[in-house]
Amino acid sequence: MKREELSREGVPDLTDLLVDRRISNKELSQFCRRRTRSVEDTISCIERLLRELGGPGGRDLMGVPLIDKVRMEHIWRVQKHHVRCIQDLPGVRLYTEVGTATKAGVVLTRYRCARGSTSLESFHLHLNRFIPGTSANALNFQLYLLDGLNRWNQDRGNAAVTTKPSSFMTYSGDLVQCVNTNCLKVTGRPFLPSFRPPSKYTGELLGVDYLLSQTGQPLRMDPDSEETENLLEDVQEDEGEEEDEGIEEDQTPDDTVMNISC
Image: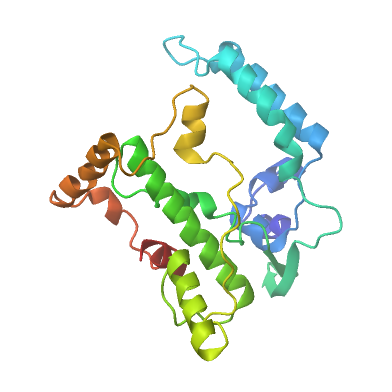
C-alpha cells in the first residue's frame, strides 16, 4: 500500500528501505501486527546500545559522559533478569480485527492491540498522583502511598467482580467490617457480602519503609510519639497555603483517578 501511495505521489527510486521509512507509527499500530524480539535479541540490542553510550559516542559537546559507566553496569546486571518479563507470551492473541480500510486501492485489515490497554500497565501513571503537591516528609509520603495503594487495590478488585459501583462509598476496611458484623447480628446477612477483610501482615516492606531499610534507617510510625505528631502537623500547615499548580496539570476526566482522589 505504501509503495503504491508513494508511486502515485511521483516519488522516484522506491527502494524497500525508503518505503519502510515512509510508513508512519500510526499506520504500523493500525494495520500491522508486531511481536517482541526474543530475550537473546533484546539483550543483544540493549548491550550494544550501552557499549555505544559508554564510548566516545556517549559524550556531550563538552566531552562529558552522558551516563555513569559503573552505575549503569550495576543497573543492567540487576535488570537483565527482567528482560523476559517484557516479551510476548507464546499462544496469546494480542491483536483483534476491528474492520478494514482502503488506501491506494489496497484493502487493509485494521487491528486493535491489547498492549497498553490494561489498568495495571497504567499503574505508574496513577502512582505519582497518590502524593499531592510537590514535596512531603518521609512519614506523610508513606501514608499517602499506602492509602493510594489501598484504594487502587479496592477499585481494581471491585471492577473485576462487579458491573456497577457499590452503594457503600468508603475505603475504610475497618468501617466496612464493623458494618458487616453488626448487620449480620441484626439481619442475619452481611451488608456487603463481597467484602473480604485484609490478610495478616506478612512483614513485607513497601515504599519509603523499603527504601530506608536499605540504609539501616527505620521509618518511625508510632502515632503517639512526639516526632510523629510534629511530622503530621506539616500537613495542616500546608493546607492554609496556596494550592500547588502542579496538581492541576491534567484535567482529563478519569474514573480511576477520581476514585483514588475521593
